[in-house]
Length: 155
Image (tube, rainbow, N blue to C red; front, side):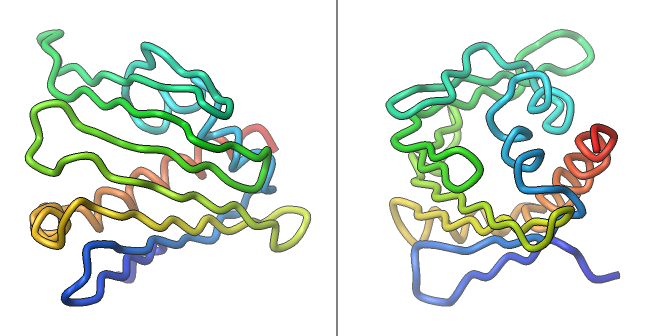
């Protein structure tokens, strides 16, 4: 089965691109990334802090069934243009991937559909390649499927 979320990673580079078309209007797709209640649902994580604004920051935490922290993510939002763009850093505590720069571009295709284009830049090609050895592609596709399902109920 072909994944709806497309990940492109060219050999010899330290970046990748991710794109996905959604059956959601662009404003709802954007809200899924900037409103804590939606992020918690589709990402399956706890939002500890989310300042959805230029020069804002965020911190998320995921727990296992025993309430132990399994993953902590944080970063700085460098730019945010409603329904159009988010530029932020992303870092996973204790992970060997380093800080990455993420550029999210939101595009309205029709009144009810939209597209997300992400450009992710890693500190090195080796760090990017380590991430790609994990089940990254099916994982992000599964997360985007949940996003579309959960936020789609608001249409």
